[in-house]
Each structure stands twice: as structure tokens, then as C-alpha cells.
Length: 337
Image (tube, rainbow, N blue to C red; front, side, top):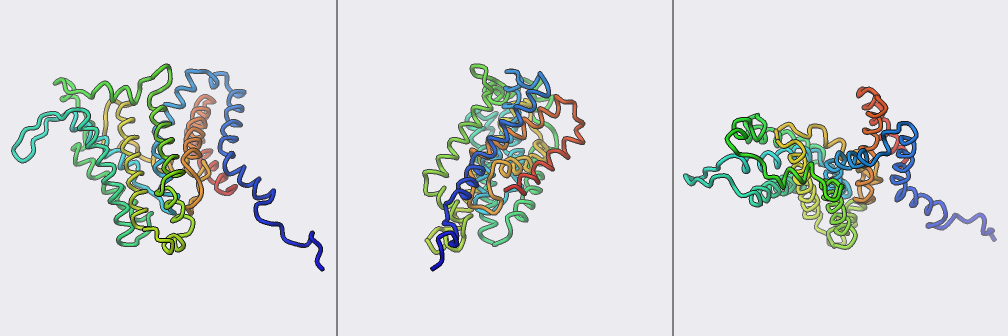
């Protein structure tokens, strides 16, 4: 009779528990180690003002990353999130600063709540379009969103006529962005950046959906094993569309926050931010093949990127070398995962 020692170890042993611990706590541990190192390397890092500055700078990437997490969990990827953010921001600012004439009726400048709602609706519509194209025509997510990324940048250029909004002429005539929008991007509440509070709220809503709602379970199922999800009765196409709609909505929210920071919008804003969002998701522990991860990890991943950028700036590291460090960090995280 074979001895017990010759039998293979049962699943769920010490090795599996250790891996799960690293997967869930690894990003946070990495963030703590990075903060400790930078605190010792430069006295300017561990100041309250600098911490708030990091959270304000990380909020945009964090919100994009939260929506991106939903898509990556299904086994997809959304390269259009930055373009969606730019288009939603441009549409909102145009509606807030330019009189609208439609079908011969002059609607004037729209009220801020209505303009912002339309901007958020544009984000949802762009996400739904991405999901529909992927589900209907069965083309890879990468190709579909690469195409819509270019299309949406072009639409944003048409909407703004290639100019920043509000333009100098509209500002001089008294048309300016509402103070509430500016506060959302650059203001503070009890010393905490409002943009960081919004990012935290978005993360908590995302966590609730993934953890406690049927849509969240469907997203994990589709990303974990698509054929098993189909046999279990999950509508894969609908799940993909919903994931992309959430990504589009969060991109629109991020775009409005950037408008508040810049007090302006333009069609080329947030260029390259889609890659930072994907990097934050990967650093946060979400599997690029889907089915494993979560928004809290992506939130921590976005903060890690913000801390790293801030620390390298404080250490007077050349921007050229910063790109190298960021790229190597992403590759090492994926190798470790």
C-alpha cells in the first residue's frame, strides 16, 4: 500500500493559501514597501500636502481602471476608455458653454445637470457600442476598441472643431463652466480631494456589483470559463455589453473630473491614459485572461502608479527613465502573477 506521503497534496493546501494571500494582498504590500522606500529617499514625499496631491493625480486613472476591470474580468480589453473620456468631456463642456439650436429651436445653454447627464449618457452609449460590436460580430475586443478609439477621437474633434472648450471667446462672453464641476476636479472636502472621494465611491459601487449582484457573478463566469457560462444559461453577449457600458460610464465620470482639474476640455485630452488604466488593473492583481481580480486591487494599482510617478519626480529622475521604470514594473508584475 502506498504511504500517505506519496499521495499528491490536496487542493487548498498551504501553497494555494500562500498564493491567494499574495494575489489579494500583494498590491497593498507593494504599495506600503514603495511608500516606505520613498519616505526614506526624500523628505518631501511623506508630507500631508504631497499625499493629497498623489490622491488627486491618481483619481482619474483609478476611475478609468475600475471600469476597465469589469471588461478585463470578462476576458476582454477596452482601448477606447481615454477616447470615451475625452468625447464625454467635450460634449458636456460644449453643452455648458455654447447655445444649442436644434430643428429650428433655440435651447440656449443647457442647465448643468442636464448637460452632465448627457455627457454621462454619451459614455454609456460608447461602451454599449463597443460591447455590441464585439458580441454581434465576434471580433476580438482589442481590434474593436482600437477602431472605436480612433473613431471617437475623430468625433470629439468634430464636436469641438479642434479647439479647446470653453474657448477664449466664450469665456470672455461670460460662458464658463459651473463651479461645482470645477470643485469636483480640483476642490477639497475637509482637506481631502473631492476627486479622490468620487474615485472611492465608484470603487465601492463596483465592488458591490461584482461581489453581490448577478451581473458580477456573470462577469466572473464569462471570464473564468466562457463555455461553462454559456451552458449555465448566462447570456455572454449581454454580459459583455453591460461590462463595456460600465467601462464607458466610468470613463465619462473620469473625463468630467479632468475637465474640473483643467477648467477646459479638448479632443486630445487623456491621450495614453488607457494604457495607464490597464497597467493599474494588472498591477492590482486582475488576470488579463479574465475571471480573477477585483476593483479594490485596481484602485490600489492606480495609487501605486501615482506614488511611483510622484516619487520619481521628487527624486529628479528624468522623464525618459520614468517610462523605462514604469514599463519594467508592469512586466515584472505580470511575470510574478
